[in-house]
Structures are given as C-alpha cells and as structure tokens.
Amino acid sequence: MADKKAGTGETVVIKKYANRRLYNTATSAYVTLEDLAKMVREGTEFVVFDAKTNDDLTRQILTQIIFEEESRGEALLPVQFLRQLIGFYGGQMQGVLPSYLEMSLDSFSRQQEQMRGQFSKAFGAAPGAGILDEAVKRNMAMFTDAMKMWPGFNALTPGGQTPGAAPENRPAPAADPLAEMRRQMDEMRSQLDKLSKGG
Image 1 (cartoon, rainbow, N blue to C red):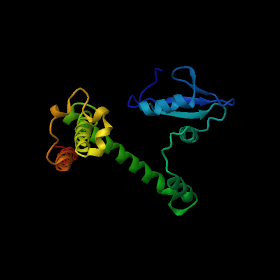
Image 2 (cartoon, one colour):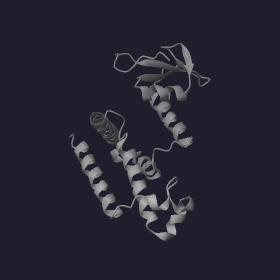
Image 3 (tube, rainbow, N blue to C red):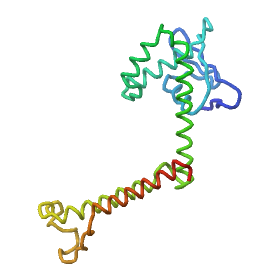
C-alpha cells in the first residue's frame, strides 16, 4: 500500500460510504479497519470523512478500530481503566482528560524509544537480545547442578547423570550455587542500572 507517511505534510483522506465501505483516496482502493490500524502503526496520518455529508468521522473510526482489537482478544485496556474512563463522560474533568491522556501516552512513547535506543547502543540489537538469554542458560545450568546435589532429584535426568557422561566423570557442582545465582543477579541489576542511566 503506497500510502503517504506522516511527516510529508500530507494527510490521507478516507471516505466512508453509506454501505459502510471505506475508500482510500490516496491509493484509489477500498480498505478495511485492519488496513487503517496498520496505517496507524506505520505512522500514516489519515482523516475519515462521510462521503455524503462530509462530516469528520475520524474519532468514530479510530474508536471502532480499538473495539475490533479488543474484541479479538488483543486486550490492552484494563477493565478498571474503562470504568473510570466512562465515569469521566459528562463530568467536570471531561475537557481536561483528553489532553492529559495524550501527554501521558506521548511521554510513555518517548520513554520506550529511549529504552530501545539505550539497548541498541549497548548491545547493537533488540532490547535485551543475548544478555537475558545467556543469563537464563547459566541459571538453568546452575539449577540443574544444584538439583544433582540432592539424591531425590537425580532421577530428573536419564540414569541420574548428565547425558553422555559417566557419574565419575561429572564435574563437581559449584560450591554454593545459591551464592553464584545471587552474584549473577547482582551483575544483571548493575548492568540494567547502567543502561537506564544511559551509560
């Protein structure tokens, strides 16, 4: 779909017809709510007008997209939030709430971008790629070794031994696996602290 992106100064006009079909005037093609949701995720600015009356239906269509996402199991909005939101309609705070929610979401998005940037700078990849996987592998290995120290848990591996190794050839478990796990957790904590401070 060759839509015009946000930032080009042009907004895509979508027309809604009486048969409830949505027509993208930029691509000269009919679109679905799913297509519009994809445009939002891609950062494509659009407005929706009623083809007959020229009324602005953008808010109504965006609300409909949220309803569709929520009804197919993509639950994002907690029930308590929805109750509180409904409670604000007709109240004194109704005029203030939209700008407050907009600022809150904008701030949340900026924080997400900063975190992504810090992870990319630190690891040159997606958030946490590698570090968490490696930590999980190490912790699982230590957990397995710790379980082998207790006679009852030896049955967890076939023959009560590491596959392909005779019992006498097995490496001795770490002196204190719990202390080692704590040490690794402290290391991870300090690395995450450095990342969150931009270091």
